Length: 166
Length: 170
Image (tube, rainbow over all chains, first blue to last red; front, top):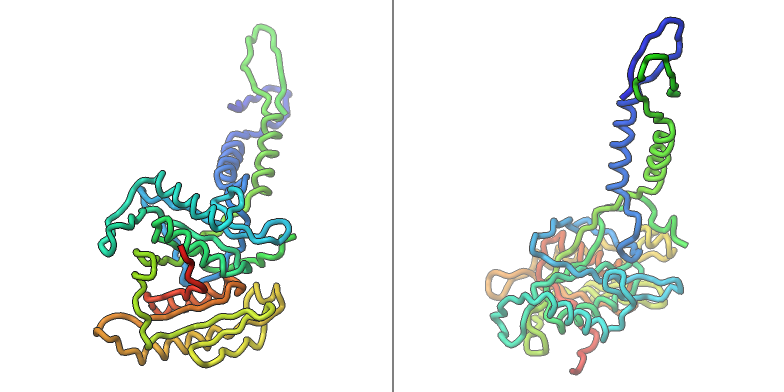
């Protein structure tokens, strides 16, 4: 883009800015891709568990995320992704609806009457939230025929999670 | 930086003025650099709920189980490993304990207990691992439940049951 010209009596120095612009664009694209601008999930401070495994999702695997977090009034709320807060009864209804919408079931050798959904549920629960929520979510999953449930945790904490908390 | 020159008889090379573009590009770069917050990779502790539901599914709880009980009394979490009470930490261990200022039960004690129980466990049918029952009050912070689950995972215990606080009637 830039052209180098030499003229008599013209001592203006021109910089070739092409490589710089290349690199700057590269950086911009990198940061744009990496940035999470909108928070897709509720803000949850996960507990630390050294045995927690980061799993690559399988191609046909559908994971529902149930978040347990604190709202502005420090009240504990249970929500699917970042939807509206759910009561335990609503959670059962929502999970049943999701399992029906997913529509894939596997055989249940023990009890053919109960259909088992192939959905996965991941519980992201704040480390300070009441563990009683887990009972409710487990029982809701079981009522909806979902048996593959995992609890989220992070492997290692690098920073104080309460630093930027209100 | 760019200069426009018109020479007579010279139709001229066309130069683009890139100053403003570079201004904007730097602005964007700085914005994205400041706005970026790298996401921590989240792991999971896998569990499978019993495939049947209702009372009929529940296997009889063997007498030879290891039972970890967690109770919360006014914010203070106390734990029992079978019959023995778990001592509290001498100092605040995790970021959560530092945040609340309340020391929790000593996890090493629980781990030692589970290890000892696992070592002395004789399965009835020859293969099968030590059943661990985790019984927690509903006001216990979730962190401690995950801590106990984590210990079980580290000790390769796969037979874990959560004690049900009450059996819901349908």
